[in-house]
Length: 310
Image (cartoon, rainbow, N blue to C red; front, side):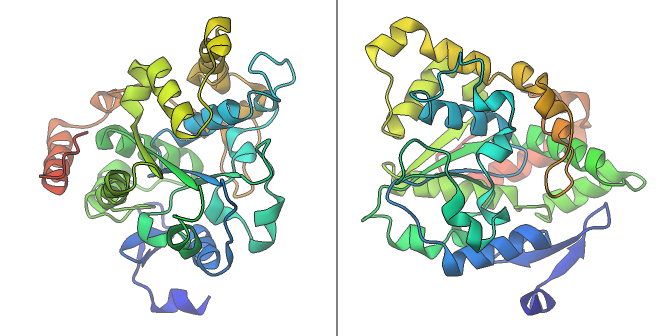
């Protein structure tokens, strides 16, 4: 790919190349996919994008989104529910990992006018067709963010389990991370882009926090369903539908399913590495006080006067 030859490049602590494009860093495969989608992707009327910075609860929310939007044809208590035999990443593919010939083959919603895509793309890399036609279309974007200290620790363990680590890899990865040289990074700019979009276009972009999903799952599930135009009926509320979705998509339940314990993705990523802890505040078990303080300091500086706090 000729463009890659013109882009700033660094190697992460695991020896993999990472490229800077539109102010953000990405490995070659998703970068190529983002550029292709910008040229060729044509949104449908009701497409839904679930966007996160890497390791912010993507897998969990993919499962929830799929189950929520398909609950009429796949009841969460269905013994043959697709989530029991397919991973959330199979059911809700990453947009930037699709070939252009695969866009129209995505069929993961009961409505033919909509598809559900996952993505780590920053706002500046979203397909222009989605942005420019946003007022004539009903496309929705749901953004999930997480405490950056937990995001960093989760990223470290994910990379360590899928790539060959070097000496002092956490320290080396931390140095790159605070410089923004991480997949989808700088994470602060990634988050801020969608925060601003959610304020400017609240009918198009829903901004959610991982910690709120964990502490108030019923409230956040109702909020998500309403935003997507699929609010829960009184009958569904009374029948325990919310509890059933939360139970099916719980971290522990999905982690223990055989489909999520074995095999790899088409990029060779081990499926079980998408499920590690899922706990809020797990960073306390791994980061030094100095490292945690540095991440907090950058976060406060980046988000100052924005109205956003993590």
